[in-house]
Amino acid sequence: MERRRYLSLLPAALWLAALYGWHRWGLPVLAPSMTIFQISHGAGFALFTVLLLGALARLPATPYPPVWRLLAVMGGALAAGVEVGLLGLPGVLFFPLWAAALIGVALVSLAARLLPRSVLRLWLNLEKAP
Image (cartoon, rainbow, N blue to C red; front, top):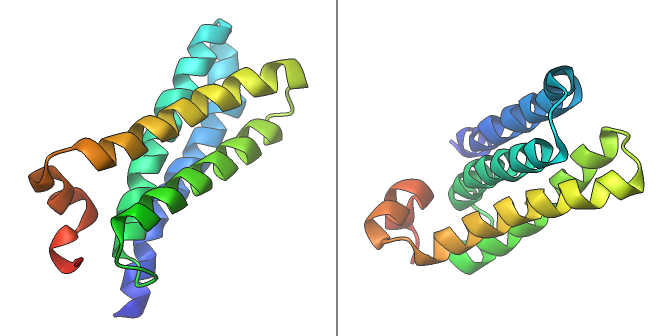
C-alpha cells in the first residue's frame, strides 16, 4: 500500500523529463523568441507543480496543506533551477527563464490556497486530511 503512494510522484517526474526534452531539443528547433521560451517555462513548471502538489498530498509525510504548498514551491524552484541550468544557457538567459518558471510555480501554490474546497478535495485528496 505504501509503495502505491510513492508512485504518485511518477507523473511529476515524467513530466519534468518531458519538459527538459522539449526545452532542450524541441523548442530550439522552432527558433522562437525569448518570450516564447519564458511562456513555455512558466506554463511547464506550473503543470509540474500541479502534479507535484497532488503527489505530495498523497504521501504519508505530513497531513497539513501548508506544508504541501511549501514543499511544492521549494521542489518546483529547485527543479526549475536544475532544468534551466542543464540547458547550458549563459547567466544572462538563465535568470529570466528561471524567474518565469518560478512565477508558474508560485501561481499554482496560490491557487492551491484560494480555490474552492470542492476542487481542492479532488486535487489534493483532502477528505483524508485533518
